[in-house]
Length: 347
Length: 62
Image (tube, rainbow over all chains, first blue to last red; front, side, top):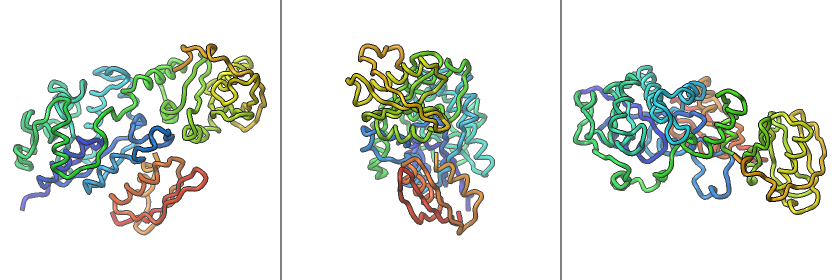
């Protein structure tokens, strides 16, 4: 009896990785999944759910996929290691701060380490040639294999027939004619395959899985680095960039203004790390202050926040500035006029 | 991410042990049970109170 071959799959939570695993299962391969948590993952962001997103399933799609497939999923925290990928990408960034090719190399390399540590035989991904402009091109896919060190133990079931034979095919662990030849940005072949496998509900195949591909997010991250004079961050920094309206009226401080209740609750969790501005006399957003304020800065900051409260047209609004030790400073301010909030303050 | 914290904690526990996760992230109510099911653990309770989310898990053999 031949040995049961085992594959570790990179699971993002999208349709492609779901299908890639099922293709392998159809060929009798035992599969377990790996999902990487960089801190920039869209999938992991369920903290501050906004009203516009409340109809979306409040779930981590990587876990959901694993459950649909009946496989184990290992979520690996790579927040610290990932910093070097982001700070020094050998192959550069995409349209924003997304180091997609370096990211893929790093993740495949981590998967290789996991594969070897757990006595698995191969790695699979849901990559499709031509689907992504950096990491999923015919000329960059071999770079991933080479730089990660995985060589021909990396199998891409959805486009394998467009690529040279891999070890699992040569050794007969999988049949090449049971693999696919998808290419390009069209999603129709994937949707047809999903239908064939009976998958009706899956993560919508649009948009990225990483906030680093988002233009506004990249602007905020760049601002964070500029304000600190160094390219550094902690997890809380990058989580906060996903939430609220970010306003920098001066280089020495930034305001993070909740846009609605869900975000306010999330920001409330940072009250011991950041001072807050609260509107007392009217309904208004919770605001965190990142930076050190002079007395004049505090006045301006309070007036900006008052601009976003229900009393923005009133002659005066009562507020509180609460420092991280809980000390409360009452304030009365005139809300800024609509033309006084400068566009260049908005990140 | 709560599910990573739970995953790491479970590695230090034994079959039959019970873990209560107290989370601020509402996604935990879906993610921890999903993670538990695929890894062979039993979810005993999920509830939310005062903006906190509780998931109680009995560790399985996996």
